[in-house]
Image 1 (cartoon, one colour):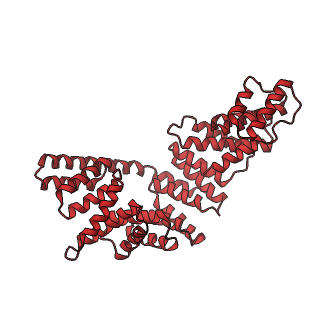
Image 2: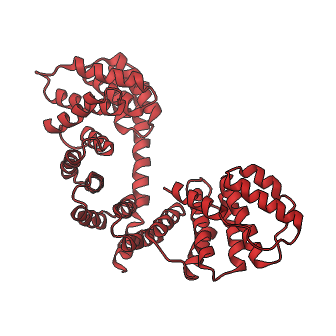
Length: 409
C-alpha cells in the first residue's frame, strides 16, 4: 500500500539537499558526494561517506544534513531512522510546510512498517508523532486516517481504529477501499449491522464493484444470513468472473454451511475450477460441493470424477487442510475407511480446530474397530469446539464500543 510513499520519500529527500554555504571544505565535499550517491541509489556508499560528519550549526545546512541522512536511511530500508532524521530536520524549522509534509511521509512509512511487525513497542509513540504533525498543521487525508486505523487495530484499540477509518471515509468518500476497510474492522468484532449499512451505501455508489459486493456477502454470511450471502456472491461473480475472492468465499460458504448447495452454485464454482485446472483450492471446493450433492442423491451419484478431482487437489497441495479435509470427507461418504483415515488424520493435524474432521475421524476409527482412538478423537473434537467458543466470546466484548463509535459523529 505504501510503496509509492517510500518512493516519494526517497526522491523528495534526495533532491536539492545541499545549497547552503559550506562550514568546512572537507565536510561540504563529503556531503555533496553523498547526496550525489543517494540520487544514484548508492545508499551504502553515501552512508560510509557521511561517517564522522556532524550536523552543521547553521539551521539551513542542518536541515539539508538531516534530510540527506533520512533519504539514505529510507534507501537502506531503515524507516525508523529515516523518520527520526526527518523529525530532527523539522525541529530546526517547525513551521516549514515542506518539512512538515516530508516528515509525515517518513512517519507514515515507519508506521506502516511497524504494523507489519509482530512487536509493536514503538507503535504508540509513532501514532503520537503523526497526531502531533496533524496538530501542527499537516493536512489530514483519508490515507493517513486509514493507516492510523490499522495501527490502532494492531494495538487492540478497536474503538480508535473504527473512528480513524470513519474519518478516512469522510475525508475520501470516493475511495471504495476505505469503506471496505471500515466494514471489515466492524466485522472483525461482530458488529454486523453498521457494516451492512456501510456496504449497502457503497453498492449504490459503486454499483459495478465485485469487491464491495463480496464484502457485503461476507457480512451477511457472518451475521447468519448464509443464503443471502451466497446470492450476493453469485452477483459479484457475474460482475467480475475473474474476481478470485468471490469464488473462494462461495466455495467455502456453500461447502460448509446450510443445506445442500443449489445446482447454480455448484456450476459457478466448478465452471471456474474447470477453467483453472491448476487452482487446487477452487477444484477442492468444486469437488466438495459435488460431493454434497452426491451424498444427498445416492441413487444417481457418480463418485468417481468427484474423488478423482479431490485426490488430484490433495496430492498437489498435501499441506492444505482444506484439500485434505474435503478429500477425507468424500472418502468417508463412500465408506473407504482406510483412505478416509489417512486423509482425515492429515486434516486434523493441519487444522486442529476442524470440529467436523475430528468427528468424522472418530467415526472412521469406530468402523475400523479402534475404540480408544475414536474416544480420543471425540475428546479432541470437544477441545476444538471449546477453543472456538472462547474465541467467539472474546470478540463479542468489542461490540458495544463499536456501536457507540458508529453513533458518535
